[in-house]
Amino acid sequence: MSTLAPALQQTGSTAKSLRVAVSIAVLLALVPLVVPPYGAILLAYGLVMAIGALGFNLLLGYTGLLSFGHSAYFGVGAYAVALMVKYLKVGSMELFLVGAIAASVLITALFGVVCVRYTRIFFGILTLALSQVLWSLAFKFFWVTGGTDGLRVPTPSLFGGLVTGAGDKTAFMSHAYYYYVLIVFCACVALMWMIVNSPFGMALQAIRDNETRAEFVGVRIWRYRWVAFVVSGVFTGLAGALWVPLNGLTTPDIMHWTFSGEIVFMTVLGGFRSFAGPIIGAIVFNYLKTYAVGYTVYWQLLLGAVLVALVLSLPTGIAGTAGKLAARFRGRS
Picture (cartoon, rainbow, N blue to C red):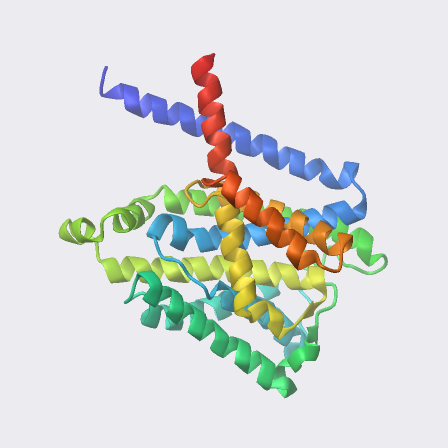
């Protein structure tokens, strides 16, 4: 009986997590029906960034590697879509996602060979340097990438052309495209949950906690880190592909190291030690930045002050602090 208790407890915890996830998904599905179009589009931006932050946290939270170059893979996904529009005249969102995933796999596989041989600050500097190489290429090769003018991306068709954006673009983005993003977001969350709770995810956590012991028991450190690097980059590239139709334009700015800093901050703000932390952090950061920009021309100062205050008051992130408060409340009751 004692051996069954942990398994039963884990099963109950998983069932509870599933119920919570389904409830949240239902609430998200109701958003376009109860909020103005701008609110739904803004939340779609948050969900897109949450996908990117989830991918980033596979490295930071589960593998123990801090990357300062994830803006490169976000940009690869966005530019893959823009270049498919410009040169291949593609208008299908499904083909955009396939192209973005293929481009992300190619770039992250190459970068990963170089980066995962190192850890700590060396890994971070390498990812930063390689991302700046891509930013420079996007900036300098203006006859291909449009340079600072960027490349425009029109409204795509969805579900194999069954849904198109002909007509009111705002209505399309706040309803049809929002639900498309929500479906991809839910699929990405489910996939990442399976990854981090699989034997592969457990091996990554073992590497994070004690690399020497993990290698001693037979974990191939380099291979696992490389696969985690590729998966992380693909998630972030997928986020870039979903982001660019919302924005309508891609420029080299999304490949700059400052955008990588935003991805890092989203994850830390939400709490990189919890699965839901990056999701919460991305959505909260997106709202904070949007309202700061609309409130004052000195929005960087305002946003920075708010974020510093949040980090100092919530050292374990929003999700971590909420978990501690919930545990304390259950203990008192």
